[in-house]
Length: 305
Image 1 (cartoon, rainbow, N blue to C red):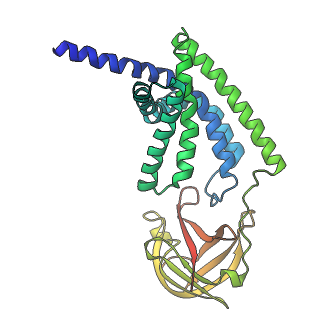
Image 2: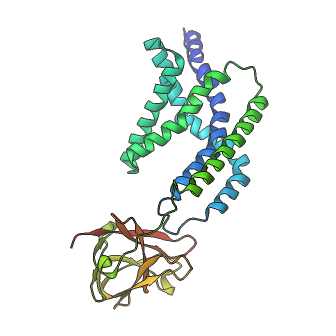
Image 3: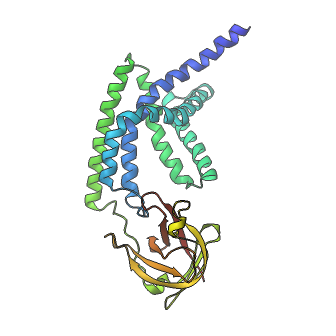
């Protein structure tokens, strides 16, 4: 009886392990193109001056991809493709429908499930997360059935994966350059706010509040500020409160991003630059506090008076 249970378990596990082995090169082949697409999309969003330029990112992608792709392919396959494969096999057994249709439904269902988890735990936007995961999981889910019909060796599968990876990356890069040149995906530009538009109340996390009064006065409560020299090693920022002054300013590093320079009439922290981000409809103020190369990002959202 015990051996029968073992054999039954092996009959269930072996096809899933076969699916996992086929999914790893498939996921590895699409990940660089997916990363490049993500970079093209985020170029139209505010990066809060915390990321390197696109050319540097593409160079890192090309240099480190051969080392990172196998473990990343395994991770995505285990988290996304394998659960979809389990659901697909159950759907085939229950509905008797075509395998490709069941795998498509299973990939979407798995993506929706992880999207719900990400929305609940990480507060990521559900629709965007589920859509991205569906697109990421669809090709491996459908490609498994094709790979299983081939008598390729492990190396034969991987060199085909490398060729597919190069082709997808070239197509994505060419398409990205085309849409950027035509302006279909415009580069992000921060909103231009007048002093009157900057005036008002701005709220952040943990009770942070900044009131900018027309004429240059300011009031702060639980507001993160640049640390003094003695606080630099231990903290990226200090929490300050009190009144002070503010004035419009621009980024001295050449980006000409608009913002304000805030001075508080206390011994807490240093004068802090808050730069304008967000959009015209939902403007933000942000500061990268502490080490400029690895500090802490804090944002403030516009609120009613």
